Length: 195
Image (tube, rainbow, N blue to C red; front, side, top):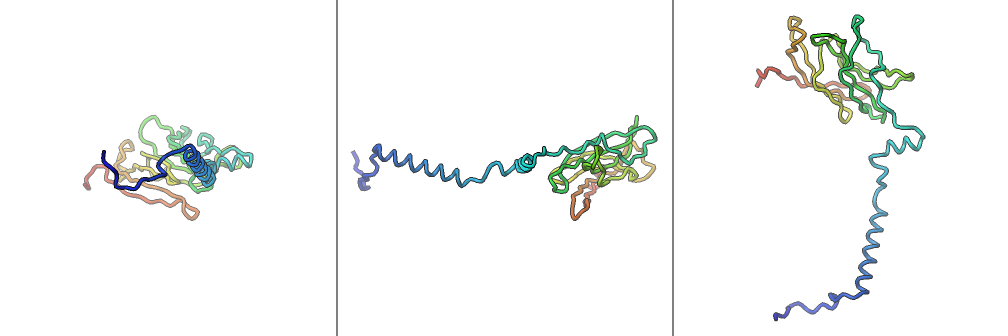
């Protein structure tokens, strides 16, 4: 048997008193950690908790089916092609961004992109027009994330291009800044000629 060069450590022998002291120390550490933790209910659920404290449920996003859009469809009616809710101005009340166009049997009717908020009555109120149908654009990809509206706009290089086949594409974003929606864009070459 080989002897150790280290001194004999008397405290390595365990006794019931040693285990009791260790358990008490661990219980104290766990209790202290519980007291020092932040209030878990004050994080992600704060808006809901605040609304519940004031006796009001969280507001639902405006319904575009109830909105009056400024489209001249000649009696054909309009279609809400896409709708995405999101808090765009940071007031903790959701808006709805809607892509709307006239109902058409064929072709690609131009779209309007509108921001809706809750009105004083039942119908939502349009607070911004991000894309006006007179621009002759249609909307491809469309999303709202972290207060930023992003879309791929499809357009035409000239009036001679058939409305079925947009030949221009542009990726754009809008973000609420200083009381207005600020647009930024990045043009793309859909045919890949610039690559």
